[in-house]
Length: 200
Image (tube, rainbow, N blue to C red; front, side, top):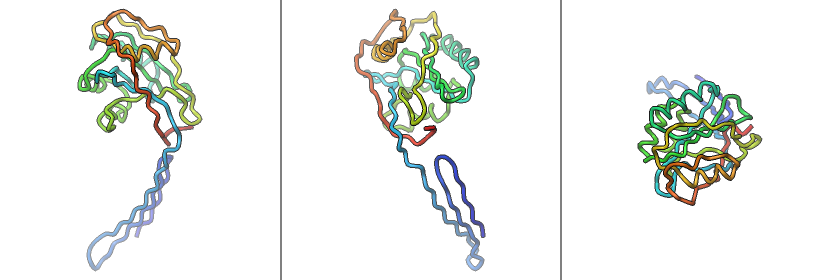
């Protein structure tokens, strides 16, 4: 007979397992209690009005000096324009990066797979019904909003860029290079969702 309990930030689990000799079977009973999402968070979507996608990258447990060369490599490999980098200052070595170039879903997903981003984030576009990547804009429980820290400049201006995403960056006071080709879309999806994950 085995009785086991597990407790994490996300769930609690109680397991009971025993052998039943006369039927040569094991019996196992599990109860799992999940932490209910109770913190509202505001984020922005990578999807444009025209069904294309800007590049959103979510890095966890990586230092900035490791992320910057990777972004520069992506710029060179895919001829990407500038990257805008944000720090999650309340969590060590956590960053967001945004490139305003737009791609089809398949192209954007292929680029995402060449990054060191969190795997759950990369796959989110397949797991979410809305088919989008979302980056947090506002506070998350007791955690502060992401903070813009730098722009990684690029010599490339090959792809059509998202006007709506650029507009939001400009509202944040971030200088955006307006040269190149733009989609002239005006609307951007702002997402409000609940979470119970890493709110402190």
